[in-house]
Length: 155
Image (tube, rainbow, N blue to C red; front, side, top):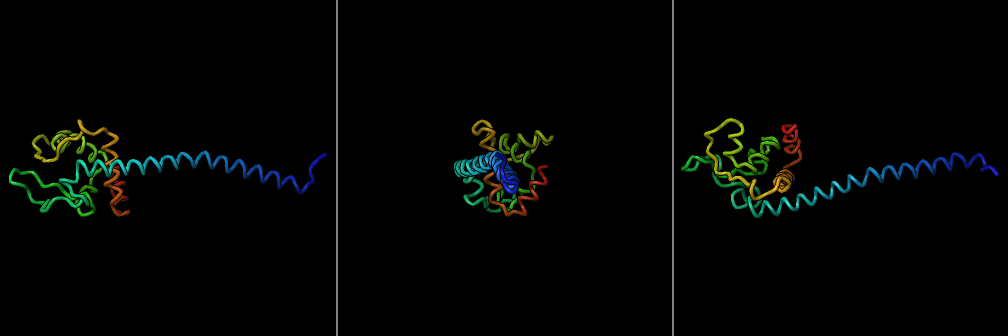
């Protein structure tokens, strides 16, 4: 017995919808998982920032007072990591290297061998993933336009 002619488009539509939903589910889950990993990284980054960075760069990423005026030893105070500072002016690669290698090490890598920096290296204490989590946390606190500009500089 054959289905009534009106049922064929109806059945094809239901099968097409089921296939489309299945494909959407396959594609949506990785995005959901990625979003959850990103949220977890932000939480991890916030905790690591509070433990390792806030004492110099401020609980609210505000930096030290007079951060643009050199200390007696020639180093600069810790800058703000919010939109008032210059952190967002730099690429992800430089920010990562600055955190991992310290200011002196990162600038030596750029060819500035006599650069005087108070920024310590965290590469021995933090994994690459932890450093990236801290940077993700910092960037998450910036306004969207600043995030976009910094993202373009990192490309």
